[in-house]
Length: 458
Image 1 (tube, rainbow, N blue to C red):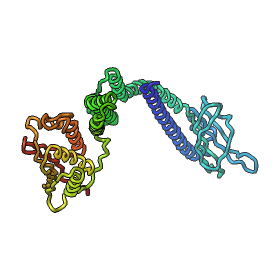
Image 2 (spheres, helix red, strand yellow):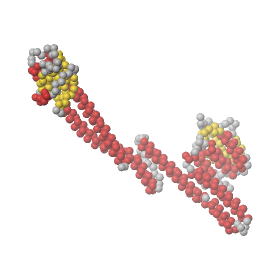
Image 3 (cartoon, rainbow, N blue to C red):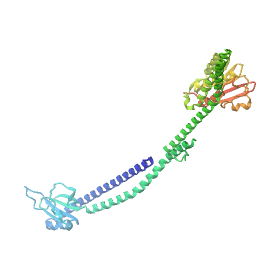
Image 4 (cartoon, rainbow, N blue to C red):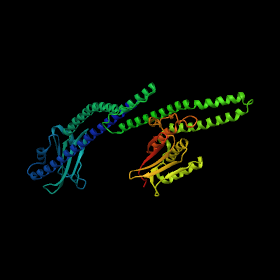
């Protein structure tokens, strides 16, 4: 059974059960109130009859008195108390013409006032028993019995009305449950159709949200759109990774293959080719490894980078980075920073990786010392890398963060990298919420500035 049919079926059953329970409760409550009202009325009438009988006792015969107070559909009876196993002399019963069978009802004396429902020959009666002291000093019961048939007939009418109302009300209940099922299933059906379209066409699509109500179904649609956006982003990254890898790895692999063939053909005859070939193969392998690592990093989504934000000292980070470059490459790196600590919140490892990318570029394209500049204002903190190298032409500045872009004079395959470093730097900066600014004058040098928001993790 489809979910839509289940919602329709179960909601219809629920509405029907609730409606039936409500109407049954109404009937039972009204029935009890009606019976109780009739019993109270019979009790009051019994007390009044007993008082009237006492006023006229002794002047008129008991039978004549009872005939004057017999109900239209019922019976009035005086029952005396037995004395030493003998019945009281005062015992008399009078019934209406429609209830003659009540005279056959067993005579029962009660010393207490009673009000109850009497069952006789399949009929129901309201009966009251009132003990009184008769004119001769004897204690007797004045028992009044009235038919409950009018009340029962009214209850039958009410029962029929409630049954008809229930059946009529079930029609809109079933129809409304069908409408409810459609409303609930609309975004789910739209999601299913969208997924089928994505599967058939191979293109990512999103649900159209009306935004009228911010309920759970709307949130589900928004979550679906977010998931599609994430899938599309990852798919684009994967597609771009495959394209980039196939494009950029082709050259080093061709070089390695060419030198390997050269060694196989002439390596034994010309030993001097061995060193040249091994050096070329090693160089291309190292470059291919670095490029593959950068491509894999770029292929990751930002959420997969495990960003850990914490308080760090920019001044201390700059000094450590400068020492690391000096130890690794023997290049002098100066640090220009205030004496006090400059605290900010960022990912230390990612910021250090970002700094190393710019320091490595500065080392490659400048023979002069490189400087790291650290400064802070009320709202921002900056850490910049400045070199006095060959610089970048102004027309190339907007493109240097594009993948595989190389400035002709500086980013050659021999002296430069794969053209992925600055692209990776841009991705890292976006991931940690930093802003990159690049200023360069050809023949003078280049300055790359990393700007961070001045916040601390309390």
